[in-house]
Amino acid sequence: MELLNNILFWVTMVFIIMTLIVFSFQILFGFLFWLKPKKYKKATQFHKFAVIIRAHNEEDVIADSVDSAMRCDYPEDKKQVIVFAHNCTDKTAEIAKEHGARVVIIHDEDPKHKKLSYCMKLGMEQLKADPEGTYEYFLTLDADNQIDKNYIRACNDAVESGVVLGRTFENSKNLTDSVISCMNGLWYIRDNVFACRSRSALNIGCVMTGPSGLIKAEYALNWDALTASEDIEFTLKRLNKDGLKVDFINEAMVYEDMPATMTDMFNRNSRMGNGLFRLYFKEGFTTLKMFFKTLFKRNVPFSLKMTYLDQYFNIALVPFSAICMTWIPLYFIYILIYTGLGNVVVLSGLNAVLDFNWFVIFVVVACCACYFIPFFFQPMFSYFIERKRMNVQRKWVVWVTILLYPCYILFDAFFIFAGFLMKPRWKKIKRSQTKIEQ
Image (cartoon, rainbow, N blue to C red; front, side, top):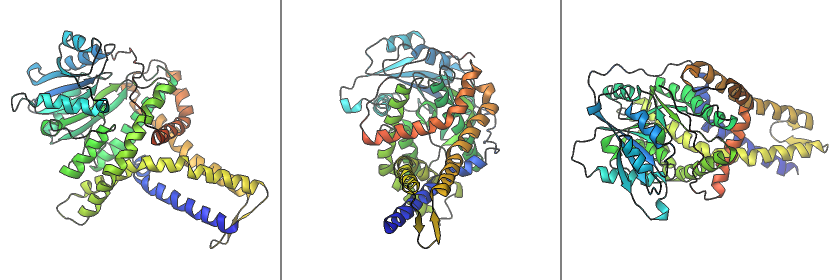
């Protein structure tokens, strides 16, 4: 048993060290929360923007999404709102037209194409038939999104400063509908406050998300990201193929409809987990290869090199989360049972032993360090500094959510892990009727 215990111990230590390496950028960003994101100068000219809203049977919410885009404070001749109606069998297209949007009808009977990536690809193929030069920049939204009235102006400022790909601030439309919606909303707000702002301050690229993307037309019209995680695939492809990183636009606010029930959260996160796991093997290693390929090239900016490494670690979080949910807890349970029966684990080469009491202390300290300390502080801090921009209708929901937030991390990791083991299908989540007042 001594040999087996030593093998298990050292294998676990290797996994823990590798996981800490993968999480290194996230840990670094956690300590750099005081950094301020990049600010863009006010633009001197107005660029052309087309707001693309992707929709599949969204008659309940499409009007609010179109209206929020139409109300944006931006010259009418420099903006247009386009709805991609993907295999819609309800009144989505008719409602979008009534509220002033141009509608691109997409009929695609291939069952393998029933995902957002093909909505983008097929919709963009139709737009390419428009006269050359019609489009300059696209802003991508989902049908359940609403945007701030200054959204396009903030994106225009970024474009004038040279931004080609951008990620805007992803907020929650229905933050306090339930504790579950609040957990999901605080996750994105926390990611913006800690990870995106730190990346922006350090000039490192962010991850583009579907409901909050700014894309120069030449890259959007030739859409080539076709997995279930098309937004992150698009980020990695532009990075690996074109050497382009995604800049953060803190002043442009998009409000997303978050899952409000555990079932909806499972359906969405397991689908995302499945797509990200596949994407890790499809694009992840190429990103790591590009880091080493450019590492000693003087003509490649240091920030771009760090973006390659950060984005590899970012996509690697998914398979390593699986390790955190399987091997490591199972090992801890095994040792707790083994030492609880009065046995002692002798660690060869360390001149150390593990008994029950010391191991219990170790597990408690490790759990506090990895879960409770960062995931109490981060959502609480994010709430305090962004509360004026958050749609908070019931404050008590926020405080209950912060107290329970470490549970969300465990559920999220489990749901993503479940996506590895199954082929989840797209399922529409229940839409909130909450409107963002401008």
